[in-house]
Amino acid sequence: MEEKTITPVRSIQGTVQVPGDKSISHRALILASLANGSCTLRGLSGAGDVLSTIDCLKSLGVSITKRSGVVVVKGKGKYGYKKPKKALNAANSGTTIRLLSGVLAAQPFVCEIDGDESLRNRPMRRIIEPLESMGAHIESAGYKAPLKIFGGPLHAIDYASTVASAQVKSCVLLAGLYAKGSTRVSEPAPTRDHTERMLEVFGAKIGGAQNVVCVQGPAELTPTDIDVPGDLSAAAFFLVAACLLPESNITIKNVGINPSRIGILDALTAMGGRVERTEVSNLNKEPRCTLTAVHSRLTAANFGGSMIPTIIDEIPILAIAATQAHGNTIIRDAGELRVKESDRLAAVAQNLLAMGAQIKETRDGLVITGPTPLHGAEIDSFGDHRIAMSFTIAGLLAAGETVIKGSECVRISFPGFFDSLEKVCVA
Image 1 (tube, rainbow, N blue to C red):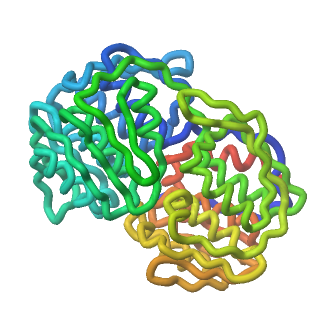
Image 2: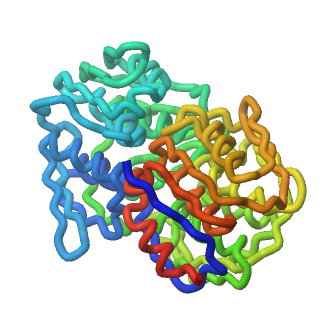
């Protein structure tokens, strides 16, 4: 287990390049592998989770090569996968196992997909039930990985998901590519819509409104080149740091600003954070821009309801911001954070208490009172990349040294995080 020692800095200044959007990268790889021909992917994330998707696809017989900074995927068509010689390994990636399961459910072979200890503890019933309703058969112990998927013919369904999860929605939509008729998914709240947008780019017929989306099957995918924008979830750490540290000014170019993902920008704005968008453009149905953040006086705000799915990955770093905001920040309806790579609500509360913050953990959220000076502490990352990076930012504000235990987990989503941060820190 690696440790990283963080010391306080005066400000952060300069320009940062963040990795390609992790969510879009997964989807680009999977859809490209199902297309009838070669696709070139630019800006693909090099995160560990994305590498897991690449490894799984290669095990299924898909040719994926990298040259001159681009990735070329030779699509094999919807039924071109080969039965893997051993269980597919999704490692720590919930996106990999859930999205690929939707495709594997339609293949003419039996396949097992597994992951690491963390992934084996994450709920899979949410995808098993709709896939079995479509005609697949999946064996598992307690609705957890490993999953043994008996693929075969699927039929369209009208599925009402009980959780607001883009992974569940995407799993069912991908399976719907193989089913005759309209496969329809409704959700209790809107979630990120990268899958729907990219399916349209690849030529599938997508419809729906509000919290409902449907795909018309069977559908063939047309080879398409994809340019992946920078990951807003990765940018969030730098945006929050700039808002909290005096004299800070940070610029991040080519960041994805999909409307279903910009909750962190809305949240910071609601708290008084000054984040400017310039150079807005759109490519492959994914908007992007340059973001600039400067030091801001933050005030407390309440976050809950339909906003939570739009900030679900950014709540840990938003909690760090809340420690320096004036008043009581309340986060509710975020129980989904308890079944991520770690119990993120418990991890945030435990580590912030260790740093001297005023924080209360609730059943489905957090109450944070600020502004409160933080002091250095030993931080347990719980093997969770977002916890490690969030508390690295907290360490920049804190008096004394902060030690991040298990810091290597940042490679799951942002392999160059510490180097990128060091380049913009002003001691």
